Amino acid sequence: MDVLSAMEVFVRVVDLKSFSLAATELGISSSSVSKQIAHLEQHVGARLLQRTTRRLSVTEVGAAYHEKCQVILAEVDEAENLVSQLQGKPRGVLKINCNMTFGQLLLSKAIPEFMAVYPDIQLEVALDDSDVELLKDGFDLALRITHPQLPDSSLIAREIASIPLFLCATPAYLEQHGRPQTPEALRQHNCLVFMLASNTNAWTLTDPAGSQTIQVSGDLKANNSLLVLQAALAHRGVANLASFVIEQYVEEGRLELLLPGYEAERLSLYAVYPERQYSPPKVSLFIDFFKSWLDRNLQQKLKYERPL
Image 1: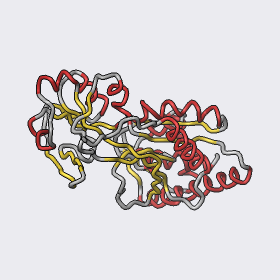
Image 2: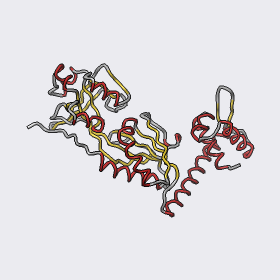
Image 3: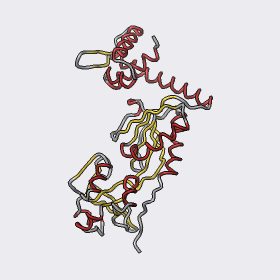
Image 4: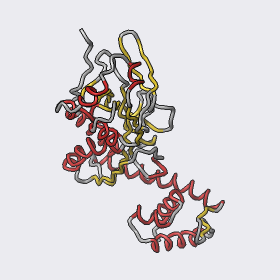
């Protein structure tokens, strides 16, 4: 029995609380997972998991063993990364988690270029707007769009791009409902809200005199900014969306920027990864590549213009 492989299987079963989910993630059969757990329990001479048809639980011994296995596997990974660094040729699997819309619109374009430059690195990319636990969920790196000040965390966060937000609506909607001339006027409009944004119903706008936070409301809240975009394009109301989401439609004249004397919030794109003594070279390599790619391709053509 390969003890390290069995340890990896055991850790994923405990983290995912499922034999079948662990099997799917590891690309092996459920029966193989069961056999490796059984062999591992025989090897250590103790029951690690309690299994019934309805639930899976970790024994006291299993919980302590799980903690040690995590440390051992991390150290093995770091040792292999150190060898890769000394050899100067990054390789292996890089698991990335990214916001859904950003991943669809931008990361998806950068990935093929990275693959062409670094053929020895295999990518596993998951697009997901929910918060993930990088170590528990097995990710090397997450790309997250949030406010410039991240909360305290044991993770390392590197800012790689600035993402401005813009208020917008279609010309047809504005012809029917009027163009807001002040932030307060937004209260009279149907505002389309992206629920996962930290601003949600409170939109902050800034001019030379200072910032104002307006409580907005409307008939749509959605956890995906592309859904909000489509509602805006269908003349349903005012949206507050990232520049990379709306840029094409503003250039085509299908969306119009609002309140030119005010600037909406500015978010940051962070590369977030677990703190380790030896950071895998493939992580820093991808971050450097993607930052350079964004510098070339995230052109940020939209600008807030101050009225004369």
